[in-house]
Image (tube, rainbow, N blue to C red; front, side, top):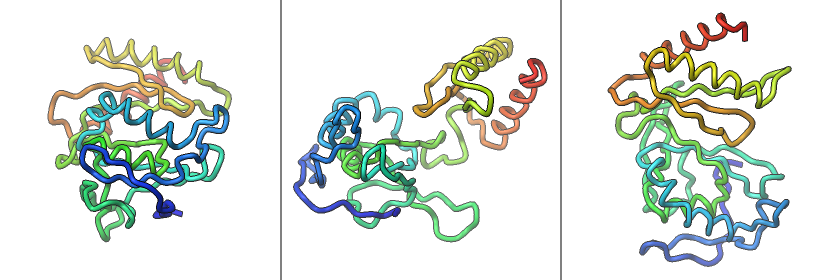
Length: 213
């Protein structure tokens, strides 16, 4: 399904760009009869708050062409039907081969194009192009496993906050949008992933040993 092309229809003029607008009356959120047109409108109104967080970050799209109750798929590579003005940044594959051309959502037309492609979830990298080896945050992703729930995640996030405060590190929580909680440590240094990965693992193991989590 990746690369699935929307049906051609009208276009929207957004900041001088012609953005395809397809199936605008399709319901993407059945619970509230929330259509694609309303999703696009929401993205436009939220753009001043979204775009600063997305700037220069390669993004994986999670697309729901038939709405949130239908089949969804992740799309990393720029699809062939994307307009030529959509910016990308090449990221090497771990297994080798051709680089993945990740989308950069650096402007409103690109954000609207993603909304029209039913990209209801936007998953940006922790780093910014071109410094793809330098994360801007350390993130702890707390998802409830067997025998736990979101309240368990909240308890662990508070324990993690206490530990980070002892290390004189600032942190902030973020709802992951699915079922858990994320805890972010903003980085103001040029730390790379070879430093942040073992640091995060060591803190997780320390917390688990201290509290038998």
